[in-house]
Length: 123
Image: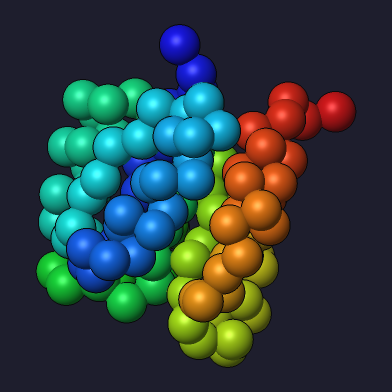
């Protein structure tokens, strides 16, 4: 079984656009569509990587990333930020578990490569 990725995005089309290529690359993917449900989804699914949208209903991506960083159970969970906003990168750059950024619209080959790199063990 492949590594597990939790996709957090409120847009079903984006969720499916991320899920398809990742599953084709051998990853197990689960979907979450709002910020309030992320903690429960992380607890139940136990992902190896989180693909996190910035603009979410309930709780925004930056607040979620900060909460995850403060929790001993999730502080090492790598995150790739997915956003249509170029300015988001500066907001997330101070969080050590953020391993990169994927700008919408994205190239599927680049997506899979960024995921692969984010899942590599820290040296």
